[in-house]
Image (cartoon, rainbow, N blue to C red):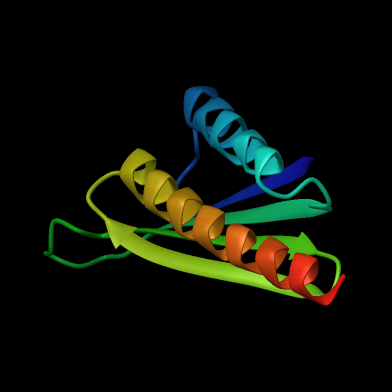
Length: 100
């Protein structure tokens, strides 16, 4: 799966990009027709500790899935987004089986 990572207001290091790639590659176990993923990482200028925003757009046949989370660390955000996407992909696959 092709993963596009865009970081806003900062430069993402290679370890973070590799972490995101590994996590998103695991989604192919749940749904093998994933086309690509766009990951947007943002740092909000607030005094709140939870100022890291991660947004993942997953392109699959029949529509896109979008998940957005705000956390203290980008790794935590990506983990939460991936677990949400796993649930959504399982649900989508179950619906596909029901119609088949």
